[in-house]
Amino acid sequence: IMQSIDDKIGISKSLNNIGVIFKNQKNYEKALEYYTKSLEILELVEDIDNKKNIGISLSNIGNLHFKLKNYDEALEFHFQALKIFEEIEDKWETARTFTNISRLFSKVKEFSKSLSYLERSLELTKKIKAKGLIKDNYDLFITLYSAQNNYQKAFEYFKLYSEIKDSIFNEESSNKIAEMQAKYDTEKKEKEAEIYKLKNIHLVEANKKIEEQQKHLRLITRILRHDLNNNLTVILSAIKMFFRKDDRSYLKEAIKKVKKSFDLIGKMRDLERLISSNQSLKLFSINKVLQEVLKNYQNKNINLSNLSGNILADDTIYSVFDNIISNAFVHGQTEKIDISMSEDSNNLIIQIADYGKGIKDSIKEKIFEESFRHGKTGNTGLGLFIVKRAMKSFEGTVYVRNNQPQGSVFILTFKKSDVIIEL
Image (cartoon, rainbow, N blue to C red; front, side, top):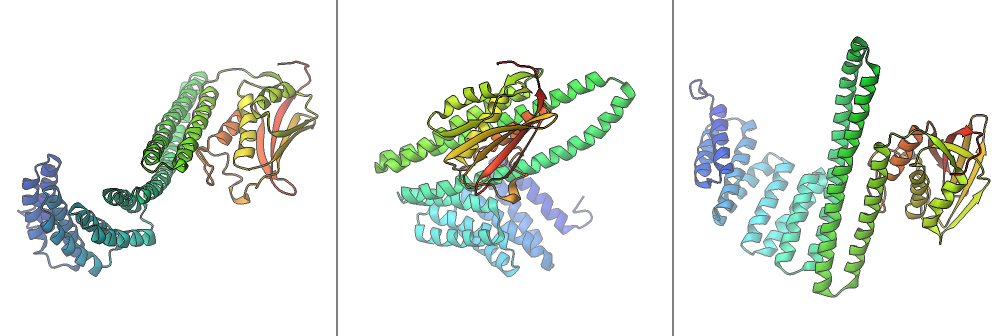
């Protein structure tokens, strides 16, 4: 069809797509044949906007020669592509081509040249904030330094690689959550119309609960798979480095990741219990609940005062207090905590005050969001999300304000009950 209407760009793209199929079949000779035909057609088009297409085609051919181990030819095509990308000032393609050239020089063990082009790529990718390319560059640094037996440098870049991989994952997760929310809002409106027609409120509520549970169970699976995989990778690398270098600092790094993994599993258990709970609210003695929770903090300075009331909650109340107290010591780095109670006509109000580094005003609203992380000690960000969700299920509230002279105060409000009970 493209040939019949003499659409040269269309012909070139069709030839390129056939080449892609052969490449996916690992028939690199055939793929090279069609990529070359595609380039020949492109070069007949006199259009300045077509230069980028020619550069990409040259780069694709270079990558095929790399797979065919024709390293000299691969370099030649990548340098031709680089000249075009620099001429049209396409920074992203220029950076990517620097990386391709670096990989080629590394393959033929010209490490100094490889390092030079890789550093140029990294400098450019940081300027344009191309996180995907930065991640690829860090990965190539690991390979490059490992090939030279410079395991210290390789390990440094591995940690940078892990950090940016986490960052990209979090951004992708946030985007997916936003897309899911938009889709959910649309579906919600449609389902509300159906509810009105069907007059079946109980069935609809049950379906909503199932959907919510499925959503959060997927969250548990995703976080466990991602965070535990990353932690285990770092642990394995650190142990290998310990045996190579006999340096105990690598063991400390491994231990830190093990502790993070334990903490993650505990948070997942709390979240699973929370989202699968169908319990009705019952009465708990605040004092009894806190005495049970504080068994985990026997060597910590925690002061209790005026905690004689009863609250309406379910079994996740223990996780509520444990998460806030744990955050104060781990993330807030406080030396002590004061827990007190007051009341108004309808509610019991519990204040958990610490004297640590406090929480910035700019993130006070965000700390209760799903998967929010902040600072070096941030793990999955689920602790305060669990607190917020549990308090909502208790028909209560939670918020945070600044403490004086420093630190934070978490304020929990519960429905008041005058019944005397000891649970």
